[in-house]
Length: 396
Image (cartoon, rainbow, N blue to C red; front, side, top):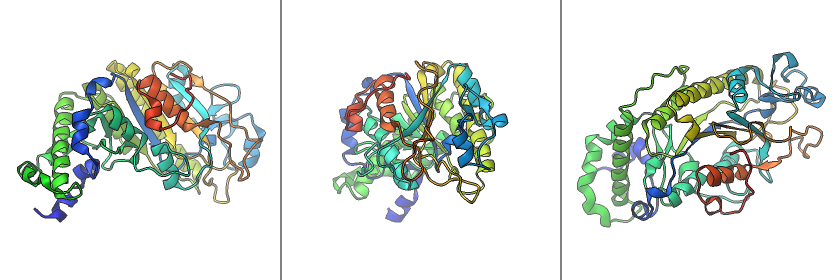
């Protein structure tokens, strides 16, 4: 069996490559430790401009810093006396009015990094800015509390660092049927007949055969569990909405998966921001509303929590290209049917007290949000996963 052919089959391999002690992880951890609640992560890749998303429309400093880029008062969707949503976020305003949305302002981390890749790594690993990690915060959740890779699913072809653990990785798949069909390819079936190679090193084909066999098992479980569920909800026709539609199908099927990961890219708006962000925020809001309505119609919404983040915000001042450059603190959206504090969670961005680079100062460390979700929603030991003690917030 050629190594080149093996590596070429990346859809399965991307989920389960090079996970030390993989097989032992399946034997050591019990599913019974997990509850019935589910977490859905939505990543807005590129650095969404939070100030033009949740607009401080009464703040003159906002309009002074963005003479042609600020959202005019007549175009915002007012949520209180000081803040309003971008006009594309009307579906989110409906969630807000229903008490299904919490907006957390000024979220970031100490010593912020303005590199997309590095800042995304920090958010996905939940480590300090001066530390590097090969495992994600959800991967460590799987390491400690899961015994099957399908307990964490990214609805994509590639697995993010967030879902990579030391002993166990999540599964990356956009289509459970296609994933299952790939696992039934004669080439992969052939792997079962190569168990005699198990004595080989973990870092060669003998080890990879084991991981691929487990991937076959996961593919079969995901497909068999979800194939009987027909999704009749109305979704927009775009890639992001399809991710959420697939996620809803997973959730409504009763699959054991506890963590789902989705993303929407394109938010790096250095130039021509107004039209680009308007389109992307509409894609986001329309997709999320369809997703929430789908879950509500199947009585699964109250057991689902949705967390939306972007790796950083944008500079307060606009640039010469009718856009904004990389910034720091940003807003985070929490969507769910059991929120303890709905609406605007905390202080508005302080535009009169910026850092030396002209960026917002963060107020809430994003890891306090993770800690709250882990402890109060997924009901696990957050310190064991985040490797540090963080204060709990009060939104769930």
